[in-house]
Amino acid sequence: MAGLRLGPLLRYVDWETASTATVWVEADRPCTAEVRCADGASGSSRTFAVAGHHYALVVVSGLTPGSTTPYEVLLDDRTVWPPEQYGFPPSTITTPSISGAAQAAPPTVRVAFGSCRWAAPPGDGHLPGRSDPVGPDALDTLAARLAADPDAERPDVLLLLGDQVYADETSEATRRRLAARRDLDEPPGAEVADYDEYTCLYDESWRDPEVRWLLSTVPSCMIFDDHDVIDDWNTSAAWLAGIRATSWWHERIVSGLMSYWVYQHLGNLAPAELAADPLHAAVHATPDGTEAVRRFAAEAAADPTRTRWSYRRIFGRVRLLMVDSRAARVLDEQQRAMLHPREARWLREEALSAPGSYDHLLIGTSLPWLLPPLIHDAEQWSAALCRGERGGPDGRWARIGESLRQRSDLEHWAAFPESFGQLTELIREVAEGPEAPATVCVLSGDVHHAYIAEPAPSAPSPGGTPAARVLQLTCSPVHNSIPAPLRAGFRFAWSGAGRLLGRLLARHGRTGPPSTRWHRTDGPWFGNQLMTLTLSGRKAALSLVQAKSRRTGTVLELAFDRVLTDDTPTIFSQSTKR
Image (cartoon, rainbow, N blue to C red; front, side, top):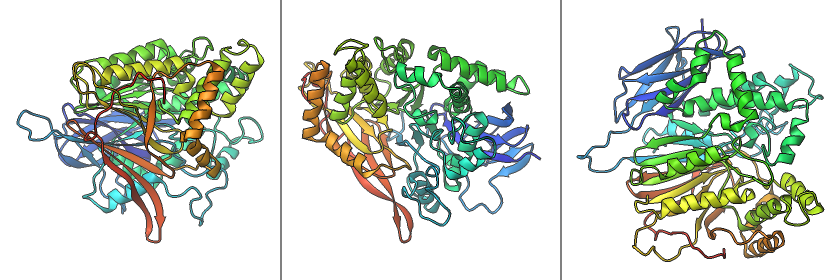
């Protein structure tokens, strides 16, 4: 009999017809996976095989708009979910109400987001019987709250903005599994080496009981960041040349992209996109799809123009553009770009198309657009040195710039100056256009603290057109650590003294003034945390909760809660000061 190995994960819920959804599962053998809902909606799919593992993404149709319906998962007509004596509420699929002229109020969309989640701390940092050394997991704590209180406000979608798994920082339990397969004294050591070892990471992360239930009942959108493959993935051409010279890198990057396609990317797609996806068709057309997925991943690793990991999702009057800011990079030092031209065109077209059809634009990018000023200037300075602004591209300053870039993780949008300017200009066009939305929010993680930053206000446009409020919303980690020295460093990077030091670096690197100025409006916050945007019509509110340990257990404490669009909206200033 077929058994459920992993899942179910509720991934896509259609906000246009409110009648379809997708549910991802992994079985332990070939079978037919079926999802049956209490309201009569259903769907089924035969599993496909990759490297001895069996998966299905089931398209559920016939859902009732504006409803919440429990569902069960069957494998070959045998119910495998929920399990017997299950300690959580039923897994459900919630669909939005269909908007109509007679509707009194616009639908409310709650978007929760964060990044950077260790399933368990690496090494021997999480031993049985001991408290978690990095504090409670924000996803676990959210799941516990929702399970305990049926009336609690539930996110309509959960955005996981990178580092869903850590291929380069494995837990003690995962290391034991790796050691049973190979010699950990040989490269890549205690890091994952191939596809089967990647499956261990997802097992560890998604078998967590609270997270398993949460992901079965709250739809999720995902995008990778560096640790899904390796720390500082695609920092620079020099970094890439060095890692390609190792004996293990090719298998690592191919396996990383294979597993990302199977475990994360497929669920990001709408049913129509799935039906048009040639790889999805290929794996279902053969008893073993391993070679098809491997070939696809190898081609994507060799040439980022061959595939697009970025995607668009629509939630009523909210448009989400999830942007690949890792695999899509151009690393040639004289043409450095966060997004290759094809990807940049896609982002621009999606952001500017059908103005007036959305009230809020969300740009999900794992790496922050607006950083603490000192870090922004340091990244632009190192980029200038590496391209030869001081002594040429082969000089001493270029070598110093590359060393600092790799050792200090200087590889965010600011480290790709032209791309930073292009993204800034695109956001300006959207925010100040004739049919501007109420907000443009860049949602990011990566930097292990949370903050809100926004461009400084300037005079209204000559026509008096209201401008969108533009915000950089950064939230991480979900479950990770940040040493005290780094906390102090981030605080200094936001300070006036840090700002001054950054300008000195910019002057030395001849980077010129930034294309906009910005300020931090709230934060920084440190800890395991999640942000939630609540959007209704042209109204927007933001909250931040942090997972805390108390005598009675773990709780989510509110650290920040504010209405965003009742404040005076801002538009970009042309000033060269920050």
